[in-house]
Length: 240
Image (cartoon, rainbow, N blue to C red):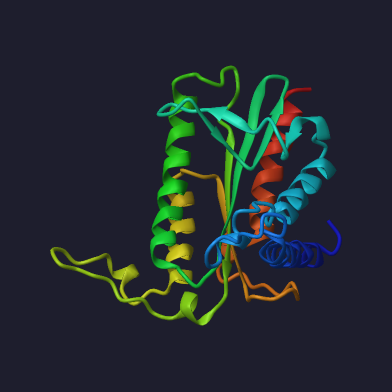
């Protein structure tokens, strides 16, 4: 698409603008605000700019809009649990073509939340792939799975992090790695272990300018979109 980088910048700008607005408006009626930064997280619409950008690109590739679900009907059955609600789902003629997760991580807390995000990513992929293996989605082909992480670019997210090693040594790649590097490693491994077909890592500093960076070319947004549209186009051709 034309002005690809500009469209992504606008989606990042939407994230920060929406988050800032939610932080200001949350509790305006009740008079009660969530503690700390939770008020800006509980709104849950910050990633809509990215979600809608991906859906628009898929539409331009020939996928009908009625087959793309991003506001409702997002629940998919699992193997270890009854259902899981994804962020964007593509279903055509009874075939599950794609399912995507859009996540963000904003400071000041990175430690525990990083572990939670890692466990979510691993668990969600393991669950849906097991369900596919057991025939839950038949006659669907193997669904394309995607994972996007938008991480705040800050001193705390990019500085080296100490690890505790009371019994055994951690893997070398984690030694002295910042949270940004840890997310980079996570996304790389999610794809290389074939849990997701593509992953994307975007770093952006706090503010509404829309500034962003992509630290790893294997994990950039264009590569993510290329993988997705290639898979969708293949399904559409096969269905003709």
